[in-house]
Length: 182
Image 1 (cartoon, helix red, strand yellow):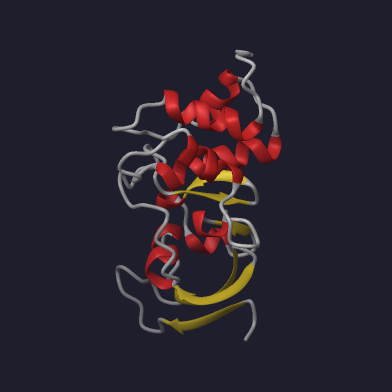
Image 2 (cartoon, one colour):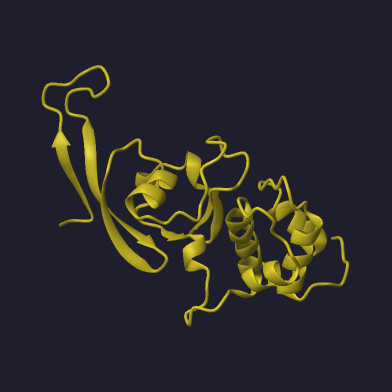
């Protein structure tokens, strides 16, 4: 099968699916380093593809508006809200979810271990999004200042842990406990 193959093309058309519009595609995705194929509708959100098709449930469904960050995944290394991203728009990109963050040997990523060590999670609902946003930051800037950490996590909301422990965990994972603010 080709990387993108049109299937189920409407010949008669309707108000919701005009004549000749593609109603489904077979697309290939690179998720956590593995090539995966799925039949997708053009309006399918990345969050739904990950959770419902591939059973990768670490990214959470919450606001459906890209405001809370609980659905954050990395697209080509950039933190992205999967609840507002069309799956088909990332078919040629590298997608990394929380399930792909652990090290090759299965041990925790340093960020995950720092969250454990610093009690940076209570209910855990926001944790995967926080970890993915922090991972994107540390991949680009291994020793960020506190202000840079705050900016990187500004799209993620936590309602129970608060942000102090989370910031401490990211600082510990980066080795940047210097207290710098810029």
